Image (cartoon, rainbow, N blue to C red; front, side, top):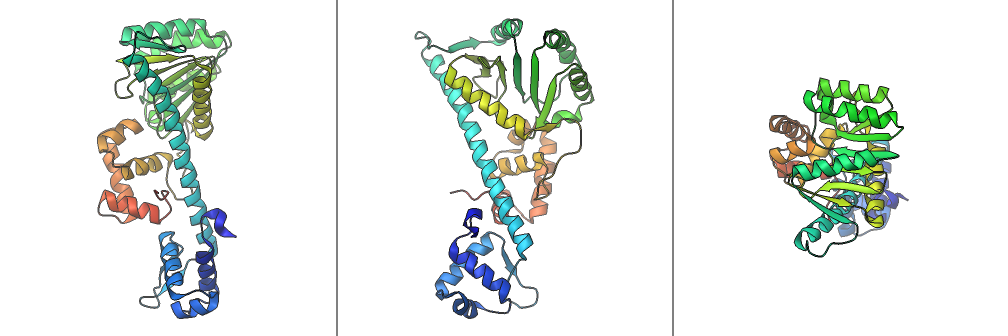
Length: 331
């Protein structure tokens, strides 16, 4: 019955027996479920990894089953984390595919590929973006992973935004959650919303991206140096994937203004993203860049997560996060 939540038949049988017969040891469980001692011990290992059984405070060396309401919440949170991880892999694959096209174009500039235009240097990128925004008719979708706006960039953006919104162009932008810490950025997004623009935030973004009229996309060749080079993509298949990527991220995003939403694990979106990056071995500097915060803030978030998990190292934090269902197990 609980296979849909990732629990195999033997482990489910042992878990149910432990709930019904909390005083039974391994031998009693063997008799209750009709399994060998090795099978019961294997099931107990699985249940321990899933945090469905815990050491008993009343009987030394014994295990007790957590209550069904807590247990099912743990399994569902684990499954949600696995789904989120798979979605992130899909999104990363889509971006990697687009960047592979850019790399191929850069390696073989003499053989122009239909649907690919390579831009080198900040001036060429800005000129092409200016051309695209003059031609836009319906919609502009943007990933803005650079964090807060400066007052100068806001003043530069206002006239173009006002002109586009005045023409009825739909503007949707996804920022990092850290942008909410900037008063000028919050004021700018409020100004934008008052004129019909839409802004949402997420803990991290895969890359900078601008999609115009669902027909043309501009993404950097290297996310670490967005001014060096960019690729303009117009191929139907690539645009379909990039538009799907934007819609998936947009649907999962939240409004910029308002308290951070915490999931069933008690983690904010920013903390959940930091934990995933931490488990993947990223440095504080890399985590800070992905979250749009300072390295000091990234270190503070990492330290707080380790304390909550009772971990003394980052590796141990990753292991404990998987055991608690905060992260999906890697296969």
